[in-house]
Image 1 (cartoon, chains in turn green, orange, cyan, purple):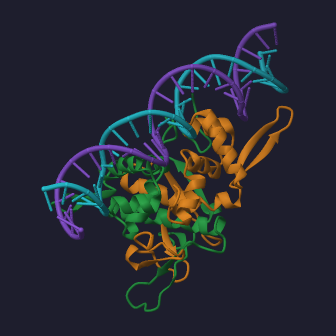
Image 2 (image 1 turned 60 degrees about the vertical axis):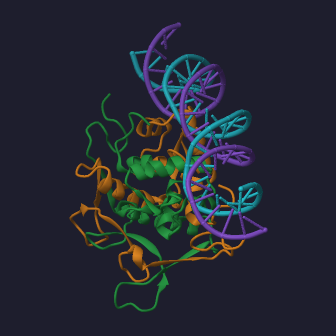
Amino acid sequence: MKDARPCSIADTLALVGEKYSLLVLREVTMGATRFDQLVRNIGAPRDVLTTRLKRLVDAGVLEKVAYSEKPRRFEYRPSRAGLELEPVLLTLMAWGDRHLNDGDRPMVLEHVGGPGHTGGHELVPVVTCAECGEKVRHDDLTAHPQVPGWTVTGPAVA
Amino acid sequence: MKDARPCSIADTLALVGEKYSLLVLREVTMGATRFDQLVRNIGAPRDVLTTRLKRLVDAGVLEKVAYSEKPRRFEYRPSRAGLELEPVLLTLMAWGDRHLNDGDRPMVLEHVGGPGHTGGHELVPVVTCAECGEKVRHDDLTAHPQVPGWTVTGPAVA
DNA sequence: CTTAGCGAGTTTGGAAAACAAACCCATGAC
DNA sequence: GTCATGGGTTTGTTTTCCAAACTCGCTAAG
């Protein structure tokens, strides 16, 4: 991973791309915030989970909050930054629903719109551009690397 | 990872969540499709990259195409399914830009809209709901697990 | 007061994966 | 011939993962 293209995707994955980290985020954003819930729902080894949680707390993605003194016990809550990873989870889920679990989704998300909306409908997540409001299509994108030496195909000069 | 909550996020990550896999997707969707480009741009060990590519090809996310006979050489192109992972990459990049590389993004994506649009602008990816068109906010979502025994907090009965 | 149990980890020892560097093999350039 | 290039494979060592067992503080039961 040294001498790699500088990139926010890589940076983000270096933080939350280790095994189980995004599943931790899934659980805590859904409301399962305690250690044993995480172990059960994710199915991760306890020690691995411990190191993941430490890392995510240190990075400010999770907050470790005591929910009981006198046996001192903690829960792990998503920070603002942590909650902002939800779009990543939603796009991953959408892809898996489409390509891996075609037909029987293990989980359905209900979307109730902003104030004024009464009935909920099923969430169908799509990535759009905030500037123009349009659905993002691959062919409409052009990459502009900002770091000298890196082009779209690779390093320029040796 | 056994006895874990059934979930498309986990399923997707089981396929493309191993180290480097999403970076491979980043490269090939940008047009860097050859082995040595991938090694250089990602900075991954060659043998690891070999196994990742095999896995992604087997899963139908990449296609291995010969671009030369007579030294037989291949490139790895994203399939339709592979390209559909771009939303995941975009949301990861947006998060990293915001929370990790505040101010100097290593890469800027230019968005040229559909037919009719002339000037391009910078892409600002947002996840919206295809049903109602609104930006997805965390508080507007309700999770409905479809698999008996799994609630939003964890397994129901033993 | 002894035993039982729970939540939240820590410890332990073995199996699997990652890693860097060296090697290989076919071809094309000099 | 000798070197260089692309696309890997091999080798030996360092990390990481993993399951199971263990610990500690505390509460509830008998």
